[in-house]
Amino acid sequence: MIEIQQLTKVFGTRPAVDHVTFNVQPGEVLGFLGPNGAGKSTTMKMITGFLSPTSGGARICGHEVTQDPIAAQRCIGYLPEGAPLYPDMTPTSLLRFVSEARSMKRARAQERTDEVVALVGIGSVMSQRIDTLSKGFKRRVGLAAAILHDPEVLVLDEPTDGLDPNQKEEVRKLIRSMAKDKVIVLSTHILEEVEAVCTRAIIISEGRVLFDGTPAELRARSATHGAVALHLGNTQAEAASAALSGLAEVGRVEVLEGSPGEELVRLRAYAAGDAPLLHSITDLARSKNWDVQHLSVERGSLDEVFRTITTQTGAQ
Amino acid sequence: MSVALHNTRCVFKRELQGYFATPVAYVFLVIYLILSGVFTWYLGGLYEQDQADLTPFFSFQPWLFLALIPALAMRLWAEERHSGTIELLLTLPISPGQAVLGKFLAAWLFVGVALALTVGEWITVAWLGGPDHGVIATSYLGTLLLAGAFLAIGACLSALTRNQVVAFVLSISIGFLFILSGYPAVLEFAEAVLPNFLVEAVQQMSFLTHFNGLVRGVIDARDVVFFLSLIGVFLFANTVIVDSKKAD
Image 1 (cartoon, one colour):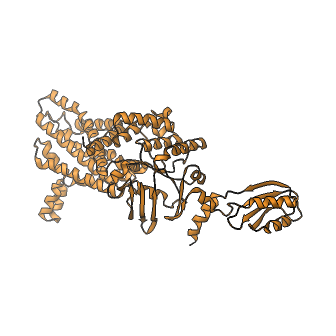
Image 2: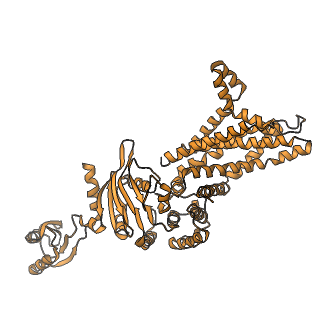
């Protein structure tokens, strides 16, 4: 549905998007991650035909964007970064304009308008001028305009930016509800959002794809993924640390808190391989009679993975 | 209805609504009508000339348009760029050419409405004496074509920048050159320094040369073609600019 081949955009001499290649199938929700200026928006502008690539190409529903932008644009719904809207229009007149620009039949336009207005919850502001609306409402009006024609492909540039937590959750719910038969590409810098709505994540930095996989795979890259955190009430740090290090499955033990002689320690044991640590550690705690006050398997931090992946290239 | 026509009409409608949703339209109309009146009756001396025609009214139109039409045209594309809505507009299945034409036609119709509101002057001279209605009709045609030419220039230059003031100043400067090139002083200077065919060319590019023909009551196809092709050239340039640097 979206096929991107060696997509490249060079501004001056600086490549903003550097030979990016990926495909997205219906049912997939692709989260586009990356630091500011990584090329996320530029890629989206090229997918939607707003910006022409320096080289490479994008096919949307079989239409090459550079050859037949209009045909490609017909099957795309696009929310540009910052959701730009005509300030002197009302949501009603804006949605009417979009439905006409998309050559929707009058009855169908009315029916879809009613649907999307209810979906994004803008019914109360339909006859207010857009420049008097709050940021959250503007974003939702932009979203309504993007999904009005029920597009096969949805491209959303930071759809939840500027929304409060409740609104964010509503928009995520909306995206999930549309996901099953559409191709959705969204960019975000909120890592939790990727786990909440995306089936796949791509991290780009300096225009290049550095990671392409599921959010779970992304998290598994974290150094702390699978590590076990342990708070003990009756043991000294060195003793506990030594005992844990003795286990075959444990690679390294980190003392997070606890000075010598003190009898409350917080430790983190990292796995040596892929074998789960939990059982051997609980067995050890039982045999040593440790007073375990807290025990948890860490899921790993997306922030940490993101930082590791995106700063590695910076150092190169 | 063909898709191209439908799309152009769609942009046209939105633009026209835009004029009346903001004070722009009303301010423009009021200022235009007041200035037209002042120029005609006080500076043009329509009473004193003791002749029932609208020459004083039409002879000031180029100068009025020179200042007012860039003010109207400057927002056409610069504002879209500034607010980012150009991205919304041009990622809809509408081609740049259709968007350019729709915007231009809306602005032209709007100026046409302003022009139509000056019909009071026509009625007044008709009441005062027996003007040549044919001459007045061709003069209105010439004025409308002149307005179109100024608008096309303004729209094209507006696409070059996101700053409306820059667009305004550029449009006035270019428009001024197109008016000036028909002035005797300029032509005399041109005759002194340029070969004859270039002087001829300069004179042929003048808005005043072609406008004055129509104001005299002569519909010369060359004058009409001049204005229409000038509009065409600038709208084409406008489309190329919008298409090639829409994201800048």
